[in-house]
Length: 336
Length: 207
Image (cartoon, rainbow over the protein chains, first blue to last red):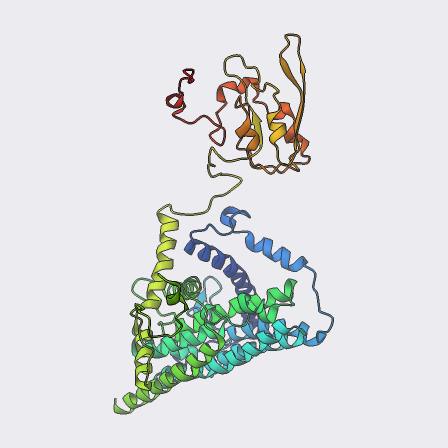
């Protein structure tokens, strides 16, 4: 990007973008539950929700009404403050993380001729900021489980802790190799690095797979959804939650799924660069949508792992692989 | 085989046939090789393909498994034992029941109650006939014992109602006279077998 084209960051623009992110992502996160139920149903040859609205499209509204009007129960011996704040941590950090990821290419609004950079704030340590925010989001389940004075909740938060300790190393190390290649922590630089059409996944396939695995652990998706594993610990950290507090956890979880999809698309899959005849914004939407679909697909296909298996996998397999990947990348960069 | 062989607990002396199981890895190198082979075998991808194939089957090849129950119903067996029906004679349209009382007698949950009287032709007439469906266990004995194939089980298995009485009166169970041509014979216990004519034998009078 030329220095002359650097867009002017205005307060109004940032506020508008923040509101848009909040509105659109929470709508999509709610809609994601519908998509998830539909896709999982199709993969089990069922129909899924289909009685509210055409093809069940308004199921989202029905769920929303139910969640909003449900009684909000705080258990007797719970720590009321932490119990109430915990869902907000999950939801808020998920949305804050989305503030620093670019989704669309910069564009100019026609007629009024305003140049719009589509990232809310191009932090120069974007990757660190987003990963940090998503990691901070894990405080939601951790505090929620411990605050509710419920043994299942406590087990859920214990699992949150071990999951957090396990995957976070892998996430960082797997992204380190692409960061070394690009030489920047800004998502926009990652996108521009791949503007010649070669996706980073070609150079860094191992890092891509490691990041996906760690990302699934980060968003509590199925092979690693230990936190609220119904068959073992009732509902884990959300056992005592009801109504909209419960809903906020899930909006946060689905927003995180979208964030992981965006990061994977921008860092590894070519970002929002044009490809062949398709403009960049369609490309990135397709990549995010496929990434989301892949999460549902994996959920339909693969079983859970146990907590000890997760720790074994992250510490004994993925972390050494990530380190080796970083070392080899370094050697190749030195040689090349 | 004698009992001694069962009581022989000395493992290894018996002549067991062992299955060809894979051996657990012994050394660290073997364990590493196992991890590598399990990691790079496409088994996870096979799992992905299975679910995707089922999705394609369901969406594009018409193999969706769901029956949307109140809108579409699966056919039930003709032998299914749901709410009873009282059948009519096809020729005259008169109800088949002759008031013999066998069903009332055999009912093991005592839920059938009937009253009969002689009509003006000195023919048994059913004046009162109810089945208490709160007690009925749908065993099918009444249909089996009925000599006239009059009381049978029908296919009405949706028995949610505001009161049980809406099923259990004689008139409710009786085939409506205008639907006589739709009346079907029951296939379950007590029904005539398809080859009933062949099984008829002459009464042995020769002794």
